[in-house]
Amino acid sequence: MTDTLFSREELAEIRSKFYCVDQDMDGSSRLFFDNAGGSLRLKAAEEAFHRADQMPDCSEHSNRTARYLEEVEQAGIKDLLEVVFNARNGVICPGYTASQIMMELVRVISAHAQGTNYVTTMLEHPSAYDAMTYYSQIHGCELRVAGVNKQSGGVDADAVIRLIDRDTAILCCMAASNISGYIYDLETICREARRINPDIFIICDAVQHAPHASLDPEGCGVDAMNFAPYKFFGVRGFGVAYISSRAASLAHHRIFGTPADNWSLGSPAPGHYAAIREIVNYVAGLGAKIAPAGADRRRLFEAGMSRIASHERALLGLALEGSGQAKGLRHIKGLRVPMDGAPLCQRDFIIGIEFDRLSCEQAVREYEKRGVITFERSAESPYSKRMVEAFDSKGMVRVSPLHVHSPEEIERFLLVTEEIAGM
Ligand SMILES: Cc1ncc(COP(=O)(O)O)c(C=O)c1O
Image (cartoon, rainbow, N blue to C red; front, side, top):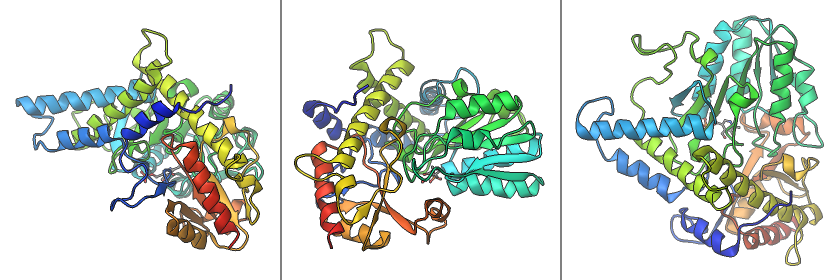
C-alpha cells in the first residue's frame, strides 16, 4: 500500500488541535522532533484533564460530582481496554509511569511463572531489561537476550524464538524500538513462543509503538502490555497497562475486599481518564473519514491509527530520500543513518543518525541553535548505552517527528541537517 500524506487542509485542521506545533513556550519558532521523549499535546486531552481535575471530589464517593467523575473514569477504562487494547477480557492497570508499571508486572509475574529461564531483547527500555535482569537473579533463572540485527536496527523474530524453550517462564519483548523505530514482528514471536511453551507469560512494552499504530495484545496472546499517554498526545504523570485475565488474577498488591483481578491502587486522577477519552475521540475522528458507515469505536480507532501511520511513513520516506528542495538523510555527506535496513512498513518514524565530525551531544546543541529539538541517545546514558553499543555506536541523534508535521517541516529539518553535517 502506498503511503499518503494528509491533504493540506486536513493537516491544517489536525495542527490546530495540538499545542505548540511550531512554537516554543515563549512563542519563538521551533520544530519539535523529540516526540519519542514526550509528544506534542492534544488540546482536547489537556483541557479535559484540567476540567475534571478542578474538582476535589473523590470518584468513589456518593455525591453528584463524585458520581460524574466515576463515570468519566469508567468511560476512560472502557476506551483503554476495548478500543486502545482491543481486549474483550482482562483489566487495566493504572500507574504514574510506564516504567513503574513494567517493573511491577515483572515482579508479580516472575513470582508465579514456572520455568528456569527468561527471554528478552537487547533493545528493551531499561524498565523492562533491568526488571528482567533483577528478577531472573532473584528467582535463579537464566536470562537469555536476543541480539540485534545491525542492518535493520531491530531484533529478528527468529533471534527471539530461538532462545525460547519449554522452560522459558517469561518473554519480555517490546513492540517497537525507541532508538530505531523498528517494529517487532510481535505476532510471529508470540505465536511461536506459545507453541513452544503454552504456559509462557509474555510481557510487551508498547510505549513507542502506541502513538503510531493500533495495538492488539489479546490477539497476539500477550499477557501484559503497557504504554505512556504522555507520548501519545496526552498528559504526563500517568502510565497504563492491559493485563490478561490469567495474569491479572496472580496474587499482587491489592486492597483485600476488592476483586482478585483489581490492579488499581488508591485514587488515580479521573482527569487522566478524561484525557484518554479525548485521545480516542481524536483518533476515531480521523478514522471516521475513511471507515465504513456504522463502524464501531475500535474500527474507527484502527482506521485513524492507520492514517496516522501512513502520513508518518510518507514523511519518513521523504526524510530518508529527500525532495527537489532538500537532500535526504541517506544522501547528505558527513552523516550516517546506521539502522536503516528495514523496509518502511516495519518502521515507526524514529530515526537515529550519526555525524562524522560531531558527537551526538554537539549535534543536538547545533540543532537547537537552529530551532530544531532532537535528542541525544548517548552511550554515556544508562537509558541508551546498551542499545547504541549494540550498534557499535557511541551515540546517535534521535529524530522523532509526529503525524502533525508537514513535508515542508521535514525539508526544513533536512536543510538544517545538511548545514550541521557540513560544519
Ligand atoms: C520504549 C520505552 N519504554 C518505556 C519507557 C518509559 O516510559 P515512562 O517515562 O512512562 O516510564 C520509555 C520512555 O522513554 C520508552 O521509550
